[in-house]
View 1: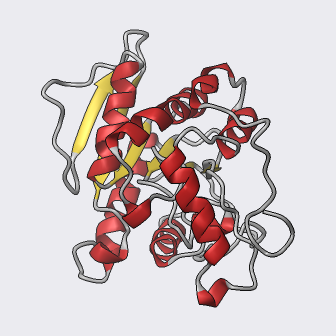
View 2: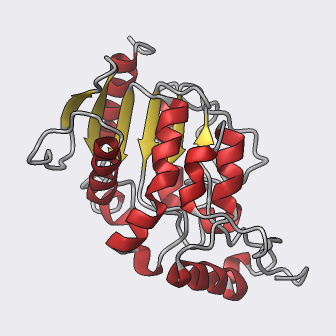
Length: 255
């Protein structure tokens, strides 16, 4: 949109496609490709509609309204994989898990467990620094009803695949079943020894996979930090802390 307080500037002329992700030489290049992608018409229409109409509490803000890149330590041994940006969270702020209650819950836990410099993350210029961890998602656009389709997940998959290659984590914390399936699928596509049948998602699930080149990594399952889980007590702060501390232990950065 233009400067009327709608979507942050973008250009369809230089829009990227997920297939170009493999050519990204580093994370800044990959992030640039992510933010200009317009490959999924339904998601493009939704994220931009939300950014135009806005929520009343944010009516004076300019929404990001674009795909959201990963955020955090570029050499993180721990990668946290969610689902997709929230309509009035990361779709508004342009930073993963930033600006909604799910992110509030996650950042507080990351701070308690030593991964975050502060317990809150409200906007990209708030000074928050993540150390040893990077946040990402298998789908980079806010989806209607927080439900991307399997086709949208597969279309967006090359972005996650290239991010895994560039970050090269030793531990992946996966928030929710959607991200679990997406991560396992991406690893299998990259030649990792993902068991078949695929391991079932569950809170506290721990799966170790290897690669023919000798590398190994561990996936840890965790209930998603959505309000549906945190407000009902299905996921509590101690439960999330336990998974993050386990991730740090496995990665060799926490006692």
